[in-house]
Length: 393
Ligand code: ZN
Ligand code: MG
Image 1 (tube, helix red, strand yellow):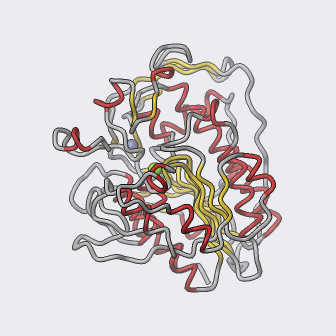
Image 2: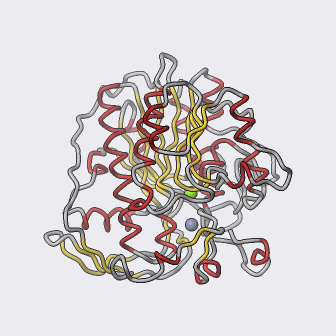
């Protein structure tokens, strides 16, 4: 969360993106200037209208008992059913998520707290255990636990992570790193050295290059064979097999300003990772959470739309491939969002938020691909992880 001076005064940052309300009120966000987003220039905070909806895709189901070669996990940070329903209404009653025929519910609580954070929530999904609030890839006693990504590596599969937050923030780190303190971001960033992940993309460059220990992690990764990319042109022209993309000093800007970085890196990741032994890829819609924290429905919806467009791309690819399990879920919901009015015909919503933090209700799990029916039911986030683990060969 918060800068060190605020850390003592805030009980714990509820946010996966690492900002705290106090910092936001001053127009800063881990040093990121968000003042231009703080006014009403982008609609009212609790109302939004979409002029032109985007086209969604339609995919058919693949052979149920086919072997699973690839696993793609898409995490909408803070994306509860309420966020999805809001986006669905705004897009005129269509989302790519409508393609899922198998759905379940994931209980997200942490081992020591009912309402979790992205560290504990993501560790549930990544590593098959419940852990404490603020813990990343470790159990209650602080012992490192392997993630689905690590398991995929042990099977000889290629692996990737692409997000729009700092890559050393909780959700991506839950799949690669281990820490009992999510705020130790320099330390977490250094764990990417030697991690062996083939495709890494996000923000957070500051923690890689402007470090208190003087190390330059980008240079270290280059020595390790990675191509470093920091703009869309670099993504488009990339041809190698070890990708490191860091596109912002901290979190990336909102989607209308940053452009289709996540969508293009997600496509590129699949292209780079696809191989005969298969791959594991985690794609995060990181900033649905951020704007739900700030109770700004327009920005939140645009992040959800970007994430849903990526889901459409992934489903179309998985339909052709036939051996890819696609899971869409969330680490928790955010904002206590309620859809109180709106119109499908006019693509508008009016919402109410009850908190600037997270809330503790079950989140959806959507599954597509071979064995998708295994994900029907009500279960813990850790159980979701164990079910994916059991299917990965
Ligand atoms: Zn959050
Ligand atoms: Mg996150």
